Image (cartoon, rainbow, N blue to C red; front, side, top):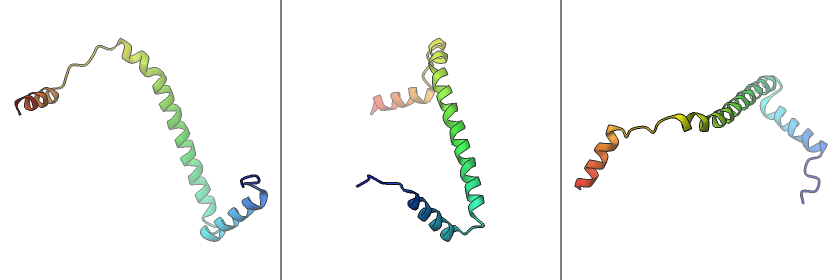
Amino acid sequence: MLRNALEPWHILVVVLVMVVLFGSKKLPDTARSLGKSMRILKSEAKAMKSDAAEAPVATSSAAPAAPTPQAAQGSAVDSTR
């Protein structure tokens, strides 16, 4: 069924449909926008990976945080009900 899934004429049909739908004037702008979006996505993914790699080192030396006043109030309210 998917033996010859993507052949050259498939790509040609997709390109033809894109030209008909968007017009030849809009395609360069669309491709440029897509390229910028892909670069942003790549840079954000790299930043997330580097943050994840640095996070265990930074949290192991930090002291545990004290409970917030809202959390303390919420537990007091819940215990009186």
